[in-house]
Amino acid sequence: MNPLQQLSPTSLTRLVEEVRLMKSYPNAVLVTSGHSRYGLKSQAEVARDAAISLGVPYNKIKIITTPDNTFTEIQSFTQKIGNDVSVIPVSDALHLPRIHFLDHQYPRLKTYYATTNYQIKEGQNRM
Image 1: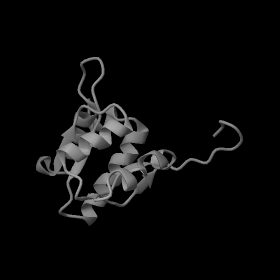
Image 2: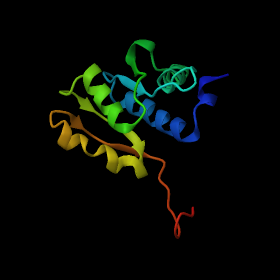
Image 3: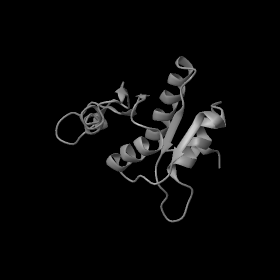
Image 4: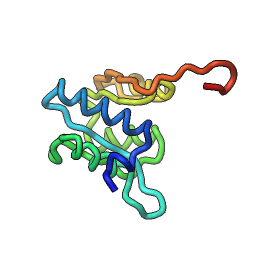
C-alpha cells in the first residue's frame, strides 16, 4: 500500500505542512515520530516513507520510533537531536497548548509553531 494511504487524514495534513516548510528552509531536517503497535511498522517509519514519496530525500529525515505521547516524544527529540536547535513543531491547532510547555521545559530550543487541522465546533462536542 502507498505510504500516503497509510496515514490518517490528520497525519497527512501535518506531513504536507512539514514538507511545505522544508521547501522554505533548505537546511531543515524532518523528524518523524511515533511508536508501533501490534508489531507493525511504526508511525515514524510510515511518515518517513510518505515524506520520501513526496520528494523529501532520505538523508533529510530522522525518525524516533519509541514515543507514544507528546511528553515522551519531546523527551526523545531532545535526546536524539539536542535542545539547542530551532524547531517547528507541526500539530493540530487543538493540540498546540500541550506542546507549548516546550518554551518553559527546554528554554534553549528556539520554537516556532505551525498549526494545521483547524476545526470549529458548534455547541458541545459537535462539529
